[in-house]
Image (tube, rainbow, N blue to C red; front, side):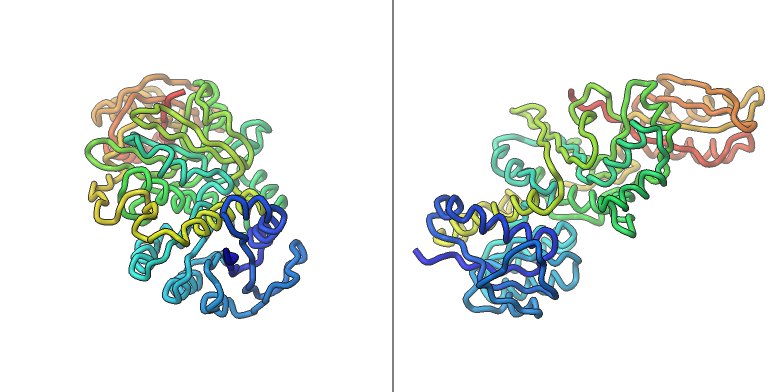
Length: 433
């Protein structure tokens, strides 16, 4: 059979890794597909010495790849949103199948892109958009397809996980570890997407759509970062038997879907608590299979290229299959997507960790506990630390409470003259071990 001809747009870290994996494993890949896969056209602003592009056509205009009549599959690896969106839509309009590792593109414009692909009889594959080399999307959409997914929770940003791991193991503060992460190349010069949870929210959007059969709804994800976490919080969490992880969580409550990214206390014996450094992991709880966990490298040239090439292989196999017979993009057919509502963060119910600094005066604690009680917040455990610069640190764990009630209570507590208004609250999740 004729080779499958691939065009790659973007020759950065993942692009060069994809070239290397396709060339190195060409024989095995051809055996799996049933015919060779050849890279015939690359669109990139500059060459990359990390890969050998001998014999491949090189264009400085990436759109030349999308309109090349000889290309069967376009691989979008340029990143960003606006140009990537136009590139992908151009390829689709020109009858190309598309592979992308771009989580922001899929999370924010996936609904539009999938409709365009459906209208033009082509496919879009995006395994590498979530958790790098972990085959989580295929596992969720196909391997666990027999299950009703109850919930999923994931460490899906390696930068944030590296920072929290170093803060715990080295007793270092956030800024110190962030500086090291930037020096090591784990964090960008502007780390906002990583440390404020935006990157994880993009990935959670995709995971939740496949898990629950809902449209992609990035704007509905509650997002909170880790920049306010202190070494005091890390030590207090350990005192109570927890570790702090920056999680993406999606739950089917029966009344709607929770979509949230935030720092979370999880028990030390939980599988996710053992995931350290830049590694990623996703726990999925299905009604039939119970809890499962997928672990591996969430970024990097060849781990991500592993997922990109797997998508190319899948599309190469599917080129001779009628489009309507292929696996739907989000695991559910588009005319059977659910309109289940996305819950606001105020409607989420969970336990909380609270850290307050109060004046060393009689009656302060009584005022705080009264406000909590009046707002349906029940205390599970409380620790009072040594006086520090005239203020007493108080750390407490609550029983389950509706977030709206908790926020109302904290607003009243912060208004007390005897309490420092900078109150830290972190959600607690007792995930199945």
